Image (cartoon, rainbow, N blue to C red; front, side, top):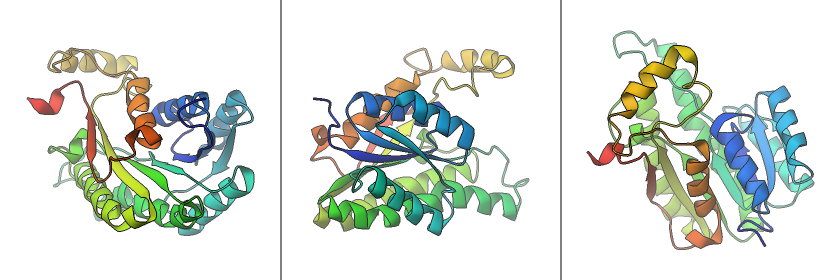
Length: 244
């Protein structure tokens, strides 16, 4: 038996990158996974690759009705939801002088408000399942400073996870946040960014960036019953970067 046998999971932003890594590992560990993303072609392709225990649903994480439809799809396809991984997000590196109100509100909607909408939408289904685990993907910028907008929302995800954990413990629902450092995704291994990333890696105590699966292994732990007494906590996977 896998560590997620009999679990039904929704993973957002799962069509590619870290989300796809989470989805693949979850299926390997016995879960039935709903790949939720706005990227239809990539999401459907991944679901086909992962087989009968994966299905794709188009989801705009900023849209309340979309969330309700995604949870209904999960229940109809696989059953009540046990696991929610709020992985979708965007980055932005503008300074406080340059960022516009419209840009700021966009990153807040995608990185922060979507997490609230996802937890609220999944709650009735998790109650049916008599418990569950919510894993909210934040960042090391939810622990230390960085770009305005991105940092703000990642701190908010961390705080929201703690508040939700206290509120939902009565339903046997756990809520934790994950804080990745620099991860080897397609975006950072492109030729125009590769040299800069390799130079930055010298300042990481472990002297390298992380593989996506190293984050997925932590997400798997939090989704599984192995972490049954962990809630309201932040879990860091950054090679020691924030310990300095």
